[in-house]
Length: 410
Image 1 (cartoon, rainbow, N blue to C red):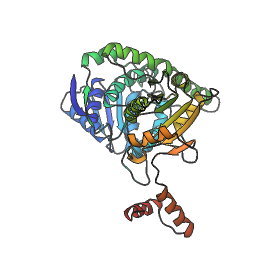
Image 2 (image 1 turned 180 degrees about the horizontal axis):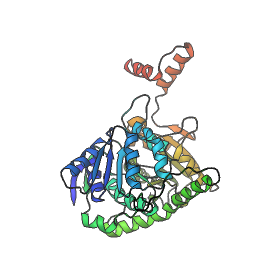
Image 3 (image 1 turned 30 degrees about the horizontal axis):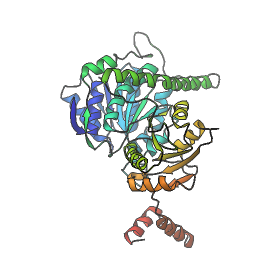
Image 4 (image 1 turned 90 degrees about the vertical axis):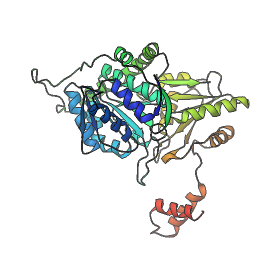
């Protein structure tokens, strides 16, 4: 059914169609509208049987999800930014225990300084936590990926994050094709846990494991992640057959077949990049775009296949590793090792800064000059703060200094 609706509401409707039995929630912008909408569906009787658990923190939200999932319930939560960081210990527990929790991450910058706008620094910081990570380009894709996420999580007994850009998608009103309950039921069977806490058949979950078996436990977790690389394309193909539209998969190319330059990115910026690629094609530039849907596990072979003919690969990232550089670009370089392509990292859109077509055109026609480039970086602002720090030991907090300089027209 086609409906014009907010992204958060659309995700809530999609999650409800998946029939979760326990939802544990703590509000944090920009994901709050999702759990608010789900609470209304539960209290209004549309989503049942389902227990909606209000908790005192994000750590408690995921901890309650772990208990519910271990007891055999289909379980869901959502968070963002500092909330995801507050969950970190529980994130590792959920994956280490092999519990198929599904969670929406409404991507938002991590402070300090405080910033509520979008980038990918929150989910990227948890890339080694053992969760599968899927990134949505649009609200339609966010809806469809949640349906696939429950199926994937339960097939592999692994937790899955569906990442969607905070505010850019969560608060945007778009036309979305919501599936019917019958379609989702046909795609997603009732939950049958691989392990369950049952009073009639008592077992221990989460035992102490020493050096004699810990490596093997972690290796098995790694194998389950690798198994997702096979299951994700199969689920995407089955979804397309059942719902009549393509969504998901590992990585998708757009005009990449003959491209000399390919830009790889995740999330909502892909729409802007495709528009820029179309314009530059009209100017005679052979350029394509690769959209990475699955970041964890990282699809090395699929990325190499999409990017393999390009001589220049530009990885556009909305997060980076301080002191090192591009996060996604490091994985891309591993995928392309030995093929001779030049790989450039472009950090863009941090803290919600707009990634404009004009800036992208300038970048791509001129070419990033350095291996690591920060799009639209205000060099004068940075230089002013460096001079200030060099003049005085007590130069003050950098963030506040930069704001004052901006107000003064530096």
